[in-house]
Image 1 (cartoon, one colour):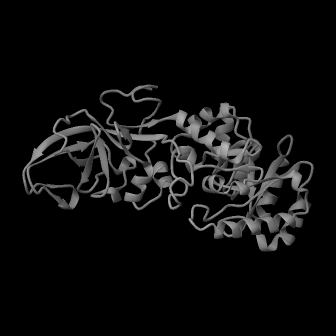
Image 2: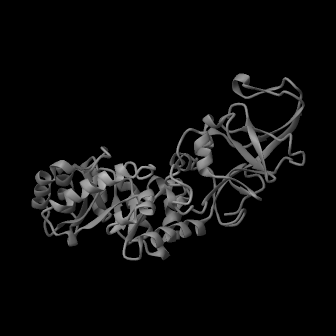
Length: 383
């Protein structure tokens, strides 16, 4: 897909960078550790289909999704690798979709296991499941303190047609400078593993997200589950520079200048007239706004790049328009491309910078980009 001259805004995806980030994860954890690429949230907003197609040649162990529907869509593409559903399957209908698509759910309670048992009984070959152990995240999972009680119940329900093939936990503070919380959770997880009434060799053991995989390779176990790092976000922005290899940027967000004009001192811009020109200024209107995923909280805080120069946002961001200050870029003209995330010449705006200005995290910025924006793979204008 190429960019037409009248395209007002779009996203460029560097899939070589995505693959390079995957390779970095694999290099850090070692060749014996499987990599479960997290592609939930439609591939963190990039499009799960294109992410999986880009990663398939690298032979990940499998993929992680957030719902049975997401997993079934990957199966429909022809994906044969394991697909883990990390959010609970709340109904029998969800379980049926997962069973038909040969997905592997993460189970957090015995009721879910019973629903899964009924679902896999209706499909040839039965099914598998992984057990989540809650060591402090609190969202899902069996309580690590009660392992001796629930583990026996899980084992009794498993059988030839219902295979218990994995166990995992999730770190809540692997991105914190202090590793105490992660170590505490790891110790709790080890305590739970020691009480399981099944052989450790029969289970895939995994715990590490992007931050843990890169900071604590000793926690890698049998597999790791990178997410944000694959997509170019810093997984632990609070740690010391250089402690984690910097990811290669994957996403660039561009928009065109639709209007350029001179304004007199005292001219206001945006809802509420929150910015007032202090002198004769040159303003540019970009064809992008909060309906496209440019958060309104970026008003007055963030910037774009035009002709390699940083230009600040003026006034409040509108649904489909954003105004920038072009006073110091006199050569800018209608049709020029502005960069809201990405590189222009020697200047760069990272997704983490945007997240900081928006008082958000990079995950929110990427997944919040509108599906209506064209996604362009490769260099600007190339398909």
